[in-house]
Image 1 (cartoon, rainbow, N blue to C red):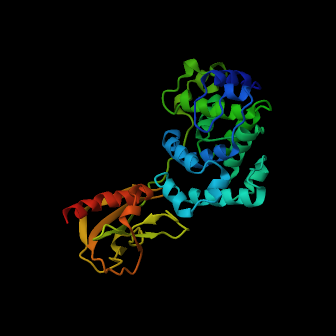
Image 2 (cartoon, rainbow, N blue to C red):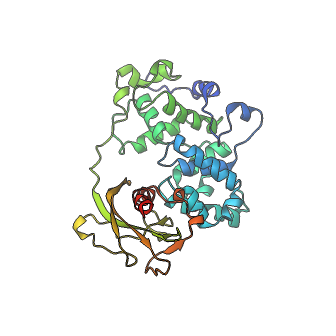
Image 3 (tube, rainbow, N blue to C red):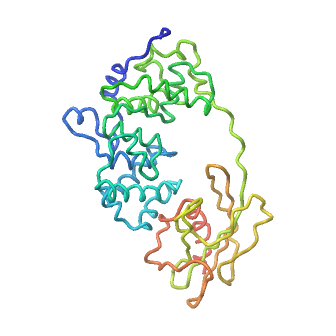
Length: 357
């Protein structure tokens, strides 16, 4: 690619027409040509789910959500606990809380119809610039720039951007904006993401079959494999805590719903201590007097900003137990899959103790 030239969007769109990934929320090129339009609800739901998560991890969740709540009106009317339970395991649980707030705002303030513009979408709870741009482009074919990690990688290589991320985000966004066409911007946005996911991959990019091969400055200069550059991350600190996993003699489990703010907000979990950076500050705080037994292993989990190590204590409680914290969930209503991942790990470590009783 010579200075002043830009790769042609049409070349990439031709590639996308032949190689677009099949996704449950996507209306493919052939269906678009047949007159089908994307469902804004499904596009919005998929974009929220895909934040910080892979397509492979999201597919089953998306199928379950849309089977149970096929429209935004259905989701807006859903019970909070049911939605949080279905979300369990996807992580970043503030997304699930904002999902409900946004669905209810769409129904209450917009008659169940999503706004078509980026500005209108950003006025909804929990929708930021990226999601607004993605929904506006993909669902409504607005010429909005859509930049995820795949697009950043494609732009960094296409223009041989040496500035490391995250400092390069603004520059990469403007480069992506300059390439976004007025024609088929929704398909174009998905095409760049598909290119990054399938050809311009983080390791061993398949440059020989890339539709933009002749336009890629990094390929010409031999720098593709090292781009995008990234500023080294600081090591994550370690926090420690205690989780108390108790089962009543009738099989009911002692659980508590965490407060909405903070990590795992609104999710079911086991009563326990605060998560402290100084492990010496982790003092016992059982929710009820019982013969608590150390499970003998830690539940370890990594969050965005720290590693967590939970010491697990297990106990069988009598029928007349009166805990100071939490509530008993009947055995018939307890589903480990409704728990966030770290709480499921704690349960898996504790249930061996229950089996021995």
